[in-house]
Structures are given as C-alpha cells and as structure tokens.
Image (cartoon, rainbow, N blue to C red):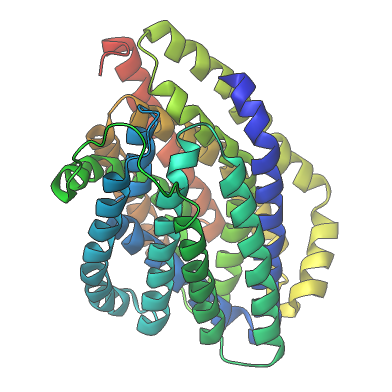
Length: 406
C-alpha cells in the first residue's frame, strides 16, 4: 500500500503545490485590488456553495471509485446513470441555494455560480474515478494542474482589467465545464467485461451514506468561514477568511495524499491492520505541529509580507494567523478519522459526531460574539480541536469495540 502511495504522492504533491500557489495568487490579486470587504464576501459565498454543493452531488465520485475498485472492467452504465443523477439533483440544489444564501446574508448570484462550478467539478471527478480506482492518480493530478494554471491566468487578466469580481467566479465555472468535457472523453470508448445494472436508485442509496462523510469533511474546511459571516462583516470578515484560507492551503497540501489510503483500507479485514496503519498516520499529526511553531519564529517577517502584498487593511493578519495555524494538526487528524470512517462504513455515526461538534462550535461562536471572551482566532482554533477530538473518540471506540467487521 505504501509503495503505491509513494508513487502517486509525487504527482499529487506537485499538483497541490501548484494549486496552493495559483489559488493564493488569485485571492491575493482579488484582495489587493478589491479590498478585504469584497474578498470576504467572495470567500464566504464560496464556502457556502461548497456546503450546498456537497449535499447536492452526494459524493457520487467516491461511490463510483469504490465500485470501480472492485472490478477490472469499465462499467459504462454506472457512469452514465451517475451523471444523470447529479444533473437531476442540481436543479434542486440551485433552487435551495437561493433561500440559504439570503438567510446567511450572502450574494445569491455568487453562491449560485460557485455552486454550478462545484457541480462541474464533481462531474470531472466521476470521470477520473475510473483511473483512480485502479490506483492511477497521475491523470487527475495532471488535469487539475493544467486547469488551475488556466484559471489563474484568466483570473489575473479579469482583475487586471478592473472587471467586477463576478466575472472571476464565472470564468472559473466555465473552465470546469470545459475540463469536464475533456475528462468525459478520456474514459474508455468501449465496454469491457460484464456490465452490472447500477440504476439511479442504487447509486442514490449508495451516495446517501457516502455524502455524510464528505459533508463532514467539507465542514472541517468551510465551517469557520460560513459561521464567521453570520457574526462579522466588512474588512474583518476578509481578514479572517484570509487566515482561514492560508490554513486551508497548507491543510490540502499536506493532507491530499492521505486520501490514497482509502481504497486500500476498504480491503482490510483485520483489526490489527487498522490499528497499525492508524499508528503510522499519527506521525503526520505530530510532525505537523512543526508548521505553527516555525511560523512563530518568522511572524515579524510574515507581517511585513502581508502588508506589502495585501495592503494596510491586512496589518493584523499575521498575528491572527499565528493562532489559527495551530488548527492544522487537528484538521489533518480529523481528515484521517474521516477516511477511516468511510472505510469502516461508519458514515451515519460520523455525521452525528460532526453535527455535535459543529453545534458546540457554533455555540462558542455565538457566546463569544455576545460576551467577547476571546479573540475570534482562538474560536477558529477551538472549532478544529472539537472536530478532531470528537472524531478521534468515535473511531478509537469503534475499532476497539467491533474490530474491522463493518
């Protein structure tokens, strides 16, 4: 398993580095040219669309990956019906996005266009699932790298021409549409082997459980920005969103290769094997504390960089980020717990666990907004500690209690 991991990690790491560079280049250009307030609206609308989109697409790319990993043949019917189901769900998701955006006080048009882009992105991952199920993450890594570069160049041009930020959002969505078409035509052109009759109801039922874990993962990434938008407006929203996006970039860079473990975990049947792998992955958690500790030694330099690059509006970003960055190890450990939950078919238990942690996190945000007990960056850190602690208790208990017989 770890041999395959190393082979694919090179390509995934290159992809994640480019993603990190381009995405932060784009949000830097947006923040510098439009200001913290508009960037805050942009980031908050995007986070809300991710949560809505996760429920809309039902993590069907993961369902297709899991099904395809158990057969050597290409099941054309499986892919065709999955596309149809997502497109059917999309109309409902877009309609629901309107009242949700209004409730959270977000720009409705931004949320809808972001959501459409999210749906195209899931369609891309469904097409690439055939290759990933066979242990090939190279094709998907190359495609994501190319489209990210195209998006970065196009977004820079739009911002440089002083167009409304809406056109940046729309351009990204159009790029995703084009690459969905490309990924679709990369699938095998002919049927191989015996075709199983996966109708839309079968796929929907499989997606109902899988989406619970994906939505839980999305909450780890987007919860803070969405909730912050309920209690903060203006420049501070943009500054807090920036600190959270910096954290997210590092989280995705370090944690992306962890997902490769999932197909292998689904094949394990021995409790001790799960414990052994889990023990090895704990090293990722402990080693990741090096990042926030290292940052503390260069915080003055970071402050100078942020101000020079983003402007004086972001003068408090370096100090806020020094606290938020300590959430990185906890985010990584939660991601590991979610991967185990998927492999052990604990989707329902995980969704309940994440829901409890979210409610408690929301309570902390609400109380702090009323009493101002702590600086908001500490509440962001607390929310990630809650996710990691709750999921850790759940997975540890289930492994010790029931073994690997799920």
